[in-house]
Length: 75
Image 1: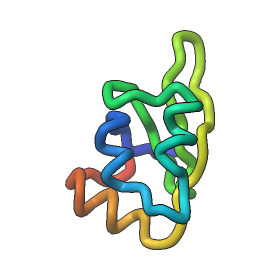
Image 2: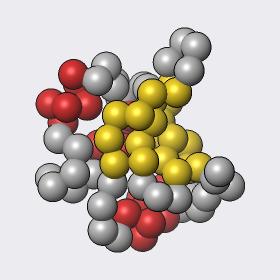
Image 3: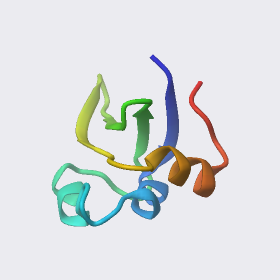
């Protein structure tokens, strides 16, 4: 599976209001320095000490938002 890896700070710039809310990210333990990965289907995962944990998903044109904000593509 291909992913784009970003920080929690970058994720906050990418998400829309109808997706993951900032309060939900805080509840999930996502901080600005958290390591986040997003797969091609829009699933958002945060890196924990022993595993990756799904914390939500992106909707709509998230591919363009990710490319536009980060310049990255899925690898």
